Image 1 (cartoon, rainbow, N blue to C red):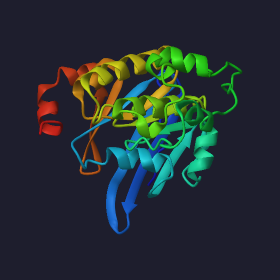
Image 2 (image 1 turned 45 degrees about the vertical axis):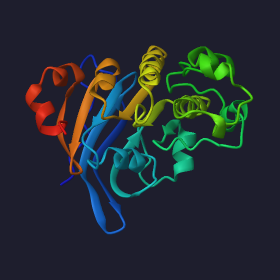
Image 3 (image 1 turned 120 degrees about the vertical axis):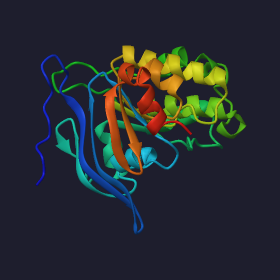
Image 4 (image 1 turned 60 degrees about the vertical axis):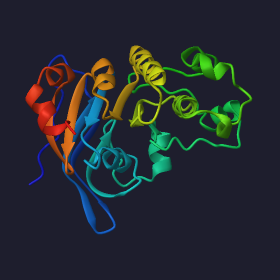
Length: 252
């Protein structure tokens, strides 16, 4: 029996993204088992867990990139059967762990590839609109390398460019896959500032992350996955004080 999707509790924003009974496969390998999660407007939500827990697969399933089955509702519309380009046009921005910037294009040219028209919420309120100027205000380092080709940038700079290019699509919801993975500590600090700035702009974010320090500083709520199943759900503040949960699900 399929459970009804939960509605927002009093004082909470209505859900922007709701996922229920999500299962996913790579070929014959069953990776995700009945995943249920919610992201509300203005929230930053973390998917945490050890390597191989299913964090990236969850995000890729939402984007329609892997074989999956279940309920995926975005702004009240069923997107479970949509193609990745349709999901992107609907207003979900995705920054993969591999970044996938265009190495032969300049910073400005990469940004242009992500450009989409301004968006509005169903109630008529404008969604945060990202221009080249506001992008460079958020990422000053990129402003100093407008003509640099993507392939000539460091890993941290490429990560910033990947996020910036996605923001040029003015997304309602941003999916970040391991944003702090493989970048220098100073870049992690810049990523923390970036996520907090996006949160102030009202951008909703679902991110997969292993860095507890990063997640603690930016996230409101957390889901922890283990072997393709959600084993823990709570506020990030509660997790930060839950020594047993961190030992059970996050310790190496």
